Length: 335
Image 1 (cartoon, rainbow, N blue to C red):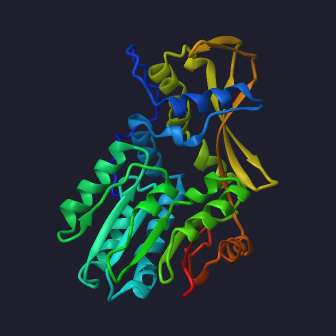
Image 2: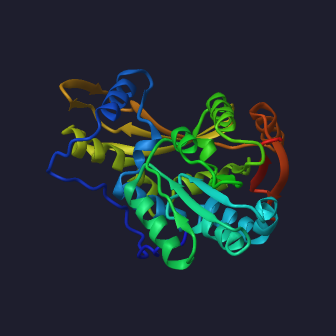
Image 3: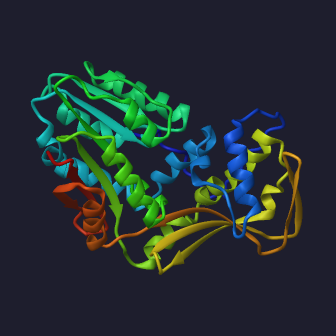
């Protein structure tokens, strides 16, 4: 993703608030309420990405300590030609799951342009603003690429997107987005994706590898406070979309390491007692009580191999950065 540079600042960002109530989809409300009423409390991480959350994540991606985007971009620039080589010569639909603004995908699309007879770019995201940005950027930069944005869940989008006649799909799951799923859920998702693909289709998945804890803590709790604002924006969104009355500044962002998965975890921790109302429900928060908002699993190369085997894929290539902080793997659906 080529991201507009955020202004330089060292101040702590404040979450957005808005007085108006905007109706949000009922399934989201039901899922949020279910998560807030269980223990430990939780909010699904996919709801980070309203318009402001999407912009904040783009800002995070440009922070010096957030290595993931920068390192994966380097891998794609250095090894992208090898990744797309199996797709050359036939029509290709590039399905970009969680597209963001599409700047990393652009590297691969440039390598395919003019080398396949028909090229379709299908960004998939829950954020309409991210889809618009990804689509417009590719439309403006790469003439001749057909754009088919899809606002949908990942599994639904793959099933809906047929490849051009005589061609194949290249599904991209970059940025270690797979790390936002528990291991069992990630394995199930990869099997579900495999069932929607055809022999000859390919998948590129990014995995963030285990590394020193100090690097991870800086990446997930930056001194500029952007990750804090990103996490707290979840509560601001609930206030805005559902008329909730969270005292947003009464919570703090917590980044914690769980060595068992292993994974980084994001939490919102109540700094003082408060009573919250949302959709007719009343929730009591005690000081120190937490809401789980995200996991970001970290992997070993052995675990990456196991995911391919359990998902029914054949590994074609494995591409590390120079420090082995990150890996992009190219898998094929066997014929």
